[in-house]
Image 1 (cartoon, rainbow, N blue to C red):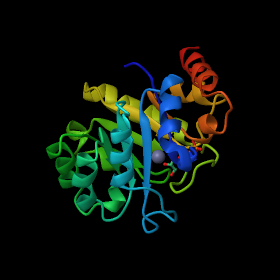
Image 2: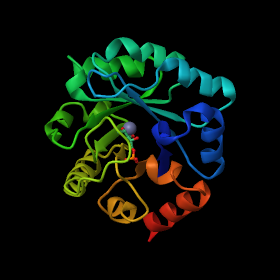
Image 3: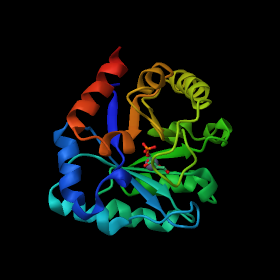
Image 4: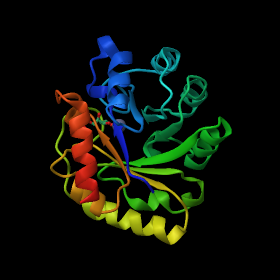
Length: 220
Ligand code: DX5
Ligand code: ZN
């Protein structure tokens, strides 16, 4: 599958969010990564469905990848679907019934994914592989941008890549946290095909050049 670059708007200038998202897409990004934090499941508070809808009303047409760090998770899903989410991912620890949450996401017309924290075991994938469009491996503990990539994620990526290949299904393998120009090559080699990057892109002066360098590193 074509590698996808998904800038995390957590590191964007929120006072100019529409323009920021537009510039990063014009700079070659594929997907908008939208981090939702509730100050309960994670120790930070960000944005909700209103902001997702505002981006759609502003004219953003690219896929919006909503990463829910919210507990409980089920009741906010319909609101995000209505607000224009394309992909919705959630953490199994934040759902009482993982299979039901996946079903709710699909019933609302979105692609669905599970997010595994650095210390969350892969067995959460065991009985739901046939219901996943995306598997997101966190390479930092969720809650903040700008943290360092946890190296053990590389082995985990390889193991999940094998599970996806064995399943014969087109499941995206997304990685989130501490992804930079300097490590994206080895992350791609370990099997990821969707790359979230917040600070590495939004803290740069020239978004297009970072995104192009990331693509070159992935292809190398
Ligand atoms: C962390 C978020 C990430 C974060 C990534 O909980 O899920 O999407 O914004 O930021 P960087 O790329 O700066 O690590
Ligand atoms: Zn995220």
